[in-house]
Every structure is written in C-alpha cells, then in structure tokens.
Image 1 (spheres, rainbow, N blue to C red):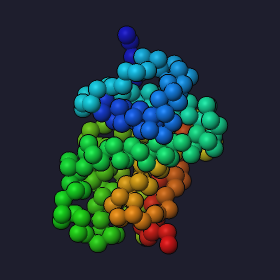
Image 2 (tube, rainbow, N blue to C red; image 1 turned 120 degrees about the vertical axis):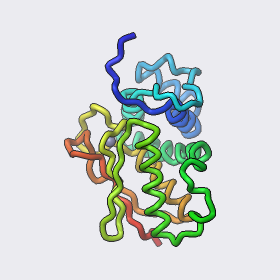
Image 3 (cartoon, rainbow, N blue to C red; image 1 turned 90 degrees about the vertical axis):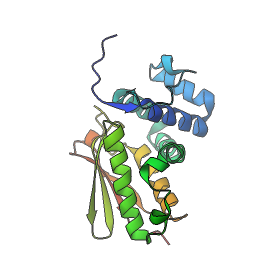
Image 4 (tube, rainbow, N blue to C red; image 1 turned 180 degrees about the horizontal axis):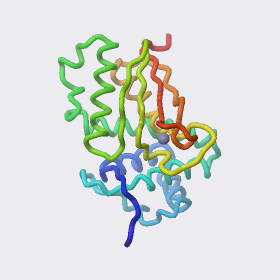
Length: 208
Ligand SMILES: [Zn+2]
C-alpha cells in the first residue's frame, strides 16, 4: 500500500486514543466513528501496545473530525474533551515513569514549579516519542502550549480551533499534577484556522 503520510504517533498512543474513545462512547460508538471515517481495518483491531510509529496523523485527524460529523460541533467537542481526559489517565499509566512525574522529588515541588516542570516533561514526551512538535512558553502566570505540528487538525481547515482532545488531555494532566485542582485551559489559535501554531493557554492559578 502506498502511503503519503509522513508523520506518526506510536502505536501505543493510537491504542490509547481508541481505548479512551471506547471508555467515553462505548464499543459501538467507536465502531460507528471508525466506519464513518473509512477506517474499518481498526474495528476490533486496535494497534498493538508498542512504540513503533505507525499511527498516522491523518488517522488521528480523521477520528477527531468524525466526532464532529457524527455529533455536531458542540457534541463532538464535549466528547473530544472527555476522550482527552481519558487519554491522560491511560497515558500516565504507560508513560508516568518515563516522565519522572511519579518521583517523590517532583511530587514535593510547589504548585507553580510543578506545573511548569510537568509541562516541559510532557512536551518532551511528545517531541521524543512522536512526530508531534510542542514548545512550552511561559508568560505572566500562564503556560503557552504551542503545538507546532499537530495531528488533531492535520491538513484540516476550520473557522475555529478544533483540537479539543488536546485541551481535555491538558486539563486532566493539570488536575492530576495539582492533586485535584481545576484550571482554565483554552485553545486560542489553531493551524486549521490559519494560525501558525495550535496554542493552548493554561492559566497557572487554579479556578477557585
Ligand atoms: Zn491542531
């Protein structure tokens, strides 16, 4: 099969996305999305749990776009946020040790330092294990999570930001890092909307 795909997630992350979708929408819900996205080869046949980069950005994009097609922009967004949160919880089990986020020294950091170090470690995970590119910037009480090469909106055009799964993922990461606090997390720019990066702005002070 000839493929024009250049960029990939590891199989493990593709598997995590599909398992998270299943947790949120059930087995039949996922199958419906896979049919709609013309991805029948994934039905009851999720990628193996390994680090081979074989889950293409176009597949990731397809899954996130089909959520909107099936449930409308609003319903699709809600589901994508929940799927993103589930992805973090699967991911932290798989990658937590590699990230160093479960070590005592890290756990004892004060909250702002912990969020900042967590964001850097998390960005490195994407940069080292996937073809996604993330750069973290710090700006008066905010963390800017710049996705410079983004699978969620890969080759998409949209009027508004569409990378809701990443927002859910970061919301849950912050919840976990802070021991149960909720933060304002918003995607302000999106490559699909013509911006240079998909930038998610994280308020470093929790919502009271
Ligand atoms: Zn994006």
